[in-house]
Image 1 (cartoon, rainbow, N blue to C red):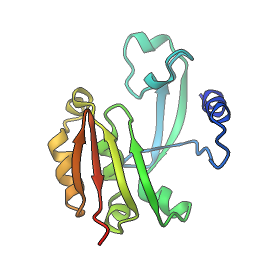
Image 2: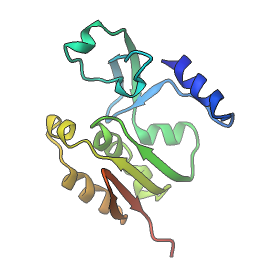
Image 3: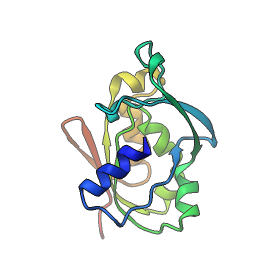
Image 4: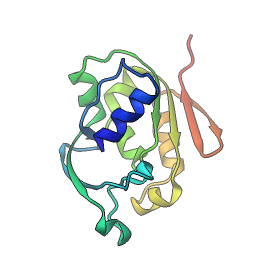
Length: 151
């Protein structure tokens, strides 16, 4: 999987980037991810459907978003885009201190209603959670844009 990401970074002339081989989740643990074929890297997933039974697997360590921010001494994020196939709410739940401290100015979340439902979550709860940290939001297609007012 990392070779594909590195190839993409090189093709787009991106050099100010550090790859971190951890996944974001509510808890620190090890997870098994089904790696999609090279033709569709966007379908790499924690969900192990029958079709993915034949794909290669890789073990990852998960960390919370707050741990990530602390570990790398991040004090400002202008834009955070999240598209992790239904696990967006979990990632944001792990960012409570980061959201409280207003480190992230803009959050763009792609919504996957079916996957949220499988996790007993929904779009409304995600919106209310982020709004509880004084973020405003608007909808852009399948995306939610949360933002802080710069007063």
